[in-house]
Image (cartoon, rainbow, N blue to C red):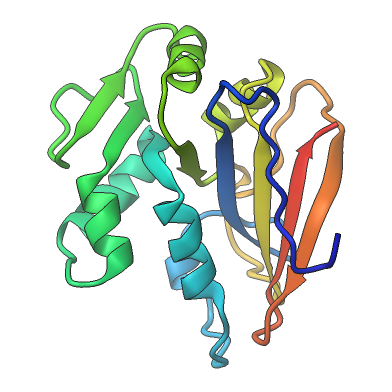
Length: 195
């Protein structure tokens, strides 16, 4: 494996995989990356994110990610990423969201573990999840998360609440590094799968 490879990590050829893609700073902040300093260097990050999205036919989100994504992406069009994310099926795990305004969005309100297991068993392409929170940890604990891609940004945010950090108390999880890709901007994409 070269440092630029992102291997397929499907556990079972008959199941779709869930790939988490999360931006993180060197000090562990994952919240509000749109407010982080610009790196001022062009790299392949947009093409890499678009390639991941186009390889999937569904997006899985928690409520906080949905609340950030829906107004931002629903208002955009005219490029492959925006057009695909707006057209594709979206699932939001939430006990409070009742009437999602973003088209093709289904709310998973009860027993998300069972419903996500069913989603993985259905035919189709892979599923992408953005952001890392309670939903991600729940999937990790139940063996539903197949790959985690951490986009490590080369700076310290030096701000944020505990909920803005990747850290959350719970059961330890061991991961195996399966790919690493440095970008010209200094971002390093680290790809892990559960060991």
